[in-house]
Length: 197
Image 1 (tube, rainbow, N blue to C red):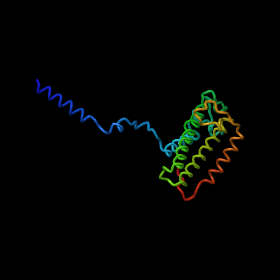
Image 2: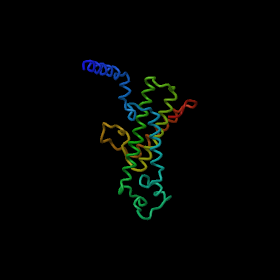
Image 3: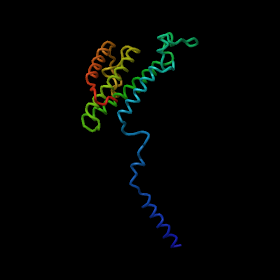
Image 4: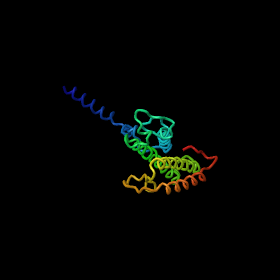
């Protein structure tokens, strides 16, 4: 019995030493929800969401082909009659453009701006500035789409999660500001530097 007890203690002691591992941090890292995201991934997702929402053939998400009379409806003609409120299509468009596109673009731009300020990227400054200019162009396109659809929208106070009631800017002011943003982005783009965001 005593030998059996000693053997059991030895096995338990061996298991304790073997079970300790320096890879504990790796085991506790959630691979599906990273703590940091590359700005290129955010930009790629935002681009896909922006294009998919505006060009999708699904009339439950995009009634624009009905408005331009490229398509017609016979059974449920709400969208053909410019009613996008009845089935909450406008909410889907707003959520997609604001949350899935503009927020991702803002986060990507902030990450790139931090890399540029701290010099932590392997890309050149011109490449980082090109990336930010491209993000500004896609953000402007998305805001223009939203103004065309909804009219007055939050713009100057938009994209701030701490501000739950942002001020709505009038469409004319937004168009003027976007024109300025696009002019700046066009002059910022450097030929010869990498232009992919």
